[in-house]
Length: 618
Image (cartoon, rainbow, N blue to C red; front, side, top):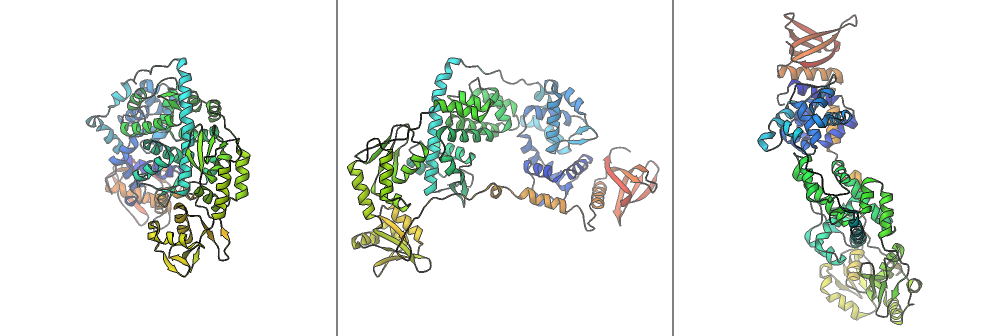
């Protein structure tokens, strides 16, 4: 164990006194190598290591850093002393107390007897800041923030809101498209997060969006809880289905509220204070001033959230929109109401064309869009969307349980132009051919392909798409060692009129929708809980007496590091007496130490010791 000062001894005691909830919060907020920590003294030492201190300081804003630096420059201060030393940062004593409480909760300050002090590791780290081009205490206190950003004219609002609504509507639809793509074809999750470049390119083509938008759409959808990773693949979550049934404005506000909640508190306050000004370089300059120890990380986060704010219409051309202002300063419901006024109205009827296209003159109501997507493929998705009915889309629909009469009735109900003859013909043809190719279970886990049409079966046998399946002729069937669903979907993707059947020849309805099973608990890092258990389990020592084990450990550390201890002892008559001792040993339930004031060596039973604490008194 590294050398521990009297301050670290106090810090260890402060850590031990935390309840489990607060201790867990601390362990999650700091960098701690769990394999090097077995007790609270190890934890106190680990929290003072340069890497741990550096990482936590990088997340603190300037007023909090100034508060810490003022305390670190002295032996100890009261809250009033700190406020007085902070200048303009100390004008609000309630805010000063909040910052002190936060610093104590992060184990960056020690609070004892109404006074605050800094552990040696923190003091030493701040002392080295000037050599790393980081501000001194004086610079933290005296450097003024960048000048106020230039406000915008009210006349700019209309054009801003129009652009913002267009972006918001497009992004809401594109997230819908993303979910639909991932539902049938999950994509690989990179180890560092995000989607691989080949998968991003495939999604961009399938969704008809620029490649550079994919990362933002994935971030927005993940933050809103609509997609997650399972087995290193991105998939929709169970929440996505309900979200997709909502109207456009309701879907948008769900995405926007998740964006707002995901913005770190300190950045959210910066943005909320600047709703009447352009964002961009002015906000970035302020972030540089506000987070001197974590500029790069904070700017990266700011730019990522600013990118998503633009996509969601919270801003347009770096200026907050009216809906964005409502979101940042009022409520999501008010933001939704503002954006709903700017969104195009949903339509409930379409034009079914003889060329097998279906044109929606506006955004189609979600329930109708979902049903139409089963029957037809989306060709273009905008204010006026285009769908195309094809043999393969109809085969796909029937695979999912649609019937000829059901599809005909649905199209007749929503069409402003009836059901044209070419569409009627295609419906009848698809219904007649559906199931021409059958897939079923072969043996315990394999599959077979059969068809009354030998030409079709021969085409499948020589189709290079099915080479990996190792199809071989067995009687009137082709058989494979692969499962039914794998072979079924491969045939479906290759546009064969395939159906799955059971042992009695009855057609089965298969769905390829894949939903992430990820939950917050699964994604939760269990390391802090394990470390908490280690700390609590180790307190009782071999005797199982937690208090005596803790006393013994404090005394052992004091002996090793030649610290003086102020020892409070309860006498037989219940009086409490204090001794200042230089401890020399602790064993057999007793402590021995030199009392220099009386020039004698004292031996004290541990069961009589009320408390010990390090002191500099001689």
